[in-house]
Length: 318
Image (cartoon, rainbow, N blue to C red; front, side, top):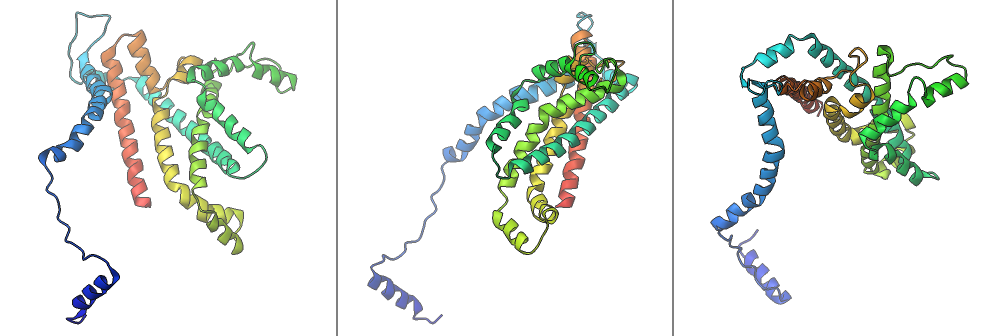
């Protein structure tokens, strides 16, 4: 630029009636303005500390004590005794295996069904609004009601499922679904799948609706098949939602207890006894808060390891 350019630009601004630009001076922030964001965060931090940090600290403290309400005068610091007792208890490892089966069975089934429903609801067809409303039904029903409903359906003597199977000739006598160790886990998995499937369906539907339709139109013009459009457009577009919902579902399933406890109470023969069931049983029936807290802390540590490995794998994939 030549030396006369600024003068030429100033003449042009004056001719256009535009006032000359004034330098912007950054205002000095007062100490009160600097502290204001932190003061506004204080109530939220206080609530988090009250409902999250304090119970965690209290559970860790209980886990380090012999704290059984059957012996209220015999509370003392026991160090890692409760953890040693849990790790050397066969029931803990059986419950850990049952928890892995529970999460490993429910999660993929819920995801596949949720994905299929989300893809279906993303299409325009008569009755789509009715389908969307009906998909929400299992999600809005409380877990206790879902457990009682499926317990009644699968009752060995009066259950509707046995009655239908006998009527169509598949079985001759009623099957005690909830009282047989070989079928108990399967039926609680079915009940939980029905109850939690709408979570995947709704979250994946929201992700699908955010995919631009122009991408599908361009792929269709290029001759891409439906499978290729799903593989190269849909899946990469919703992969972040899939990762997030899967991680949340793993944590929720590992901590869930309502359906298992109401339907089978951890039985028969401990076939459905997961780690949350052990914690509940030891705390409520055994009144051994020290041991129950140790089991819950171990479950939290296992979940932290799983979440860490999952997030690290996500970063590698990115």
